[in-house]
Image (cartoon, rainbow, N blue to C red; front, side):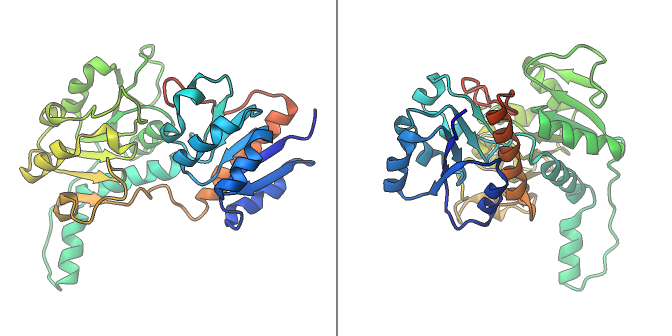
Length: 322
């Protein structure tokens, strides 16, 4: 097999690209982010690695990458890359699906405990030097409803079950009864309102697709318990934020923990910043100190498979969007 020519879209000075020296040798590497450089290198690339998380930049490069036989994204979300031409092409796309599941699962549990243990009030009392005895809630026995039961959703479910929570989940394809060792019940999309009504905490872990856009809207928020909390670690587009803000302002649900948003960065004047029943993080719940190294190691593993002619891991269904 000829030496693969790899085009890496990213800043050559970025520390995580140092791991590229671990690729099997020989490898013909070309790294850059300058548009002229990319236009010059794309036509001869066998492999394209999107390493800067800019799907729009990839879309400008893709029409030029006429020799490409494989594309990999260091991100798990790939919706920004999926131009009609790329979706229609036979070139496989792989991603970092599963790489960040452990970190996001931990964040989901942190969000549950944030509300159950009334951490915001504890913090305010500490800052104001106020001694106030609080009543807190046990999460053992509470129900976590997972909407999007992929790798991230299952990892959160595993941790929730480990601390005694009851887990129910929604997935696009029905599962055989009794085949899941964590979720007590698997719901279908048509049963979303039933899952919401039964959940004390609703975890959103869905990709961004046409089918998942605003899957949580005003009607779904009304289906939730008044004491329920919405947690979104999937994609911001799955939640109608205007409807969510209204529900939070009116205390129709207890609160929300949000790591993803319809518009990112979240504008400074966004009402979500002002609500005292919201926990916000800047799409960074998976940003562990080694998150980029983790993402790179998935690419390195797949590169070895590619040169050996073995099946690639994490192949994306480009038409489905994940």
